[in-house]
Image 1 (cartoon, rainbow, N blue to C red):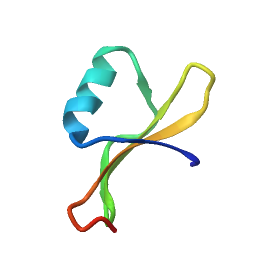
Image 2: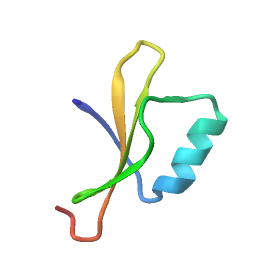
Image 3: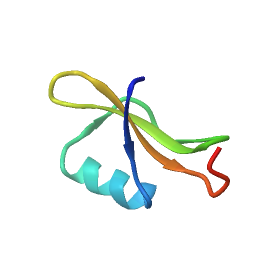
Image 4: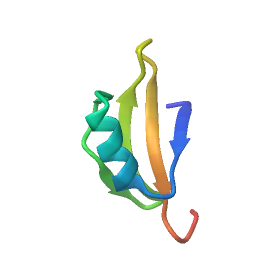
Length: 57
């Protein structure tokens, strides 16, 4: 993955993007560095929607 969309409210943006018809390729998951889900744009590029955790790691 080389494209990242950082957010300060993962669940707000995740639900808004799904409602707008964005195709998520994976379910959201919690990682050591934060909450992430993979989605594709209209050209097939894969992006991470990402909210870093409070530790910022």
